[in-house]
Length: 305
Image (cartoon, rainbow, N blue to C red; front, side, top):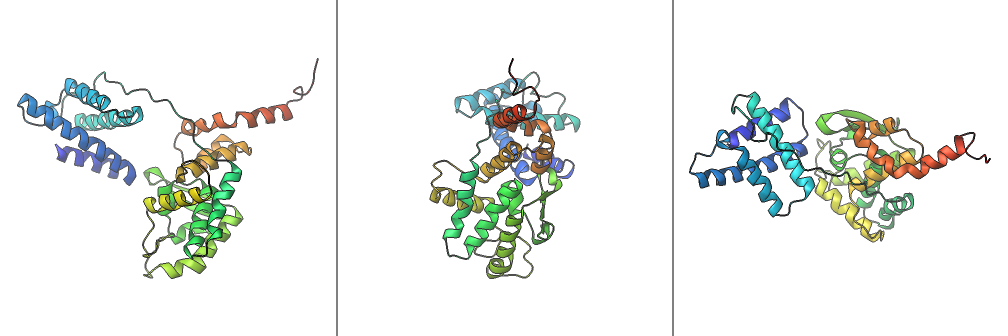
C-alpha cells in the first residue's frame, strides 16, 4: 500500500510541481491513513489493500480523528489529501471506486491573519542592532527582508546569492509549485542585506561553493526551524507579548501594504498567491482605511443636508 502512496507523491512532485513542504504534508497524512487501513483490514481478516478499503472504513477513520481531538483544519487537510490520492488511484486503474464518495470535508472558517503593528515591526527589526555578535547583522538582514518582501519562511531560507539584486532593489522568490516571482524591496532592506553579505557572510561560510544567502554558524544553509528560533528570541526580547513567527511578518506586510493604499491584485502578486480569494482575507483588516479613503474622496461625503 505504501508503493501506491509513493507513486502518488512522485506524481505530485514531477507532474504537479508541488513544493517539498506540501509533499511532506501529503506523506504524513497518507501514512497515517495507511496505518489505519492496515489495522482495519486486520480486524476483518482481509488482505491490506486500497481495493479493500471501503467507504465505511473511511468514515471510521474520520471518527477516529474526531475522538482523538484533531483540529477541524487538520481533519480537512487529511480529507483533501485522501480525496486527491483516491482520485489518482482511480485514474491509474488501481481501484474502481473511491471510498470518499459522498464524504465532505468539514467546513473550516478562515481566521483573520494575526498581524503586528508598524511600531511593533520596527521594534522587532531593531532588536539585533542591540547586539555586538556578527550574526546580529545577519538576523537584522533576515528580519528586514521578510518584512520588505512578505516572503514565506521557506522562500527566505531557500534564497541564493544570485537571487538578490541589490542595485535594482529586488529579490527573486520561488514559491509554491516552484513558481518564480520578483519582489521589490526598499532601500534600507537592500542596504542591510548588502552589509551582511560583505561583512558577515564571508566569516560564516566554510566553502566557496556554498550559494545559500543566509547561513548558520556552521556555514550551512539556515533552516526554517533555525529562522523560527531566531525570530522567537527577538520577539521575546522586544517584549511583544505574543507568538511571532515568520508568517506573522508576512501577514503584517500584507496588512500594512493594503492599509497604505496598495491594491489587492498587487498584494496578491507580491505574496505569490495563486488565487486572489486567498489574498481577500486581508481586506477584513483594512475596512477602517477604506472608510477613511471613502470619506476623503467622495464629493458628498463631507456634505450635510
